[in-house]
Structures are given as structure tokens and as C-alpha cells.
Image (cartoon, rainbow, N blue to C red; front, top):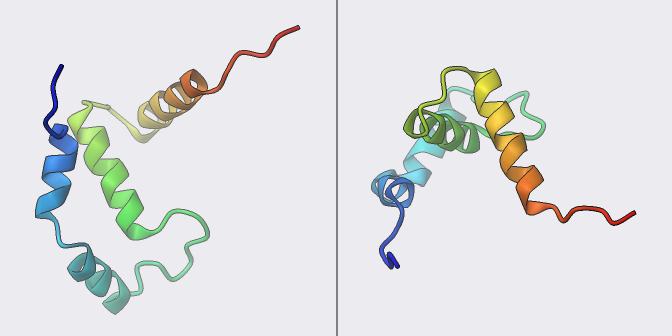
Length: 76
């Protein structure tokens, strides 16, 4: 079993979150944000590129499918 970090985690280590947020604040990137801040959107877009998603809709479908796998099935 692989005990190293995932590729995505290794790439995120190279990023400076504080510098990114400072730049986003400078240009009012989170001005009208309700749920998804610039940093989280950037990470989602980066993951979408690594997962070879072709569009935002494709990425959303993939994310919803992953969340559905985490939920237990209801018993009738």
C-alpha cells in the first residue's frame, strides 16, 4: 500500500495560501462570495485539471457522484 502523499497534496504544498488570499483580497476576489471562496475554487479547478475534467458541469457531476458514494444506502 502506498504511504506517500497524493499528487494533489504534494502540489498544494508548493502553493502559498496566505499570498493567494492577500492577492484575492487586494482585487476583491471574495467580495460577493456566499459559499465558495477564491482559494477553494482554485483548489477545485486545479483538481479538475488533474482529474482531466472537460467542463465545470463534468466536474460537478464527478463531485456529486463522489459524495453519493460516501453516503450509506437507505434501508427500506
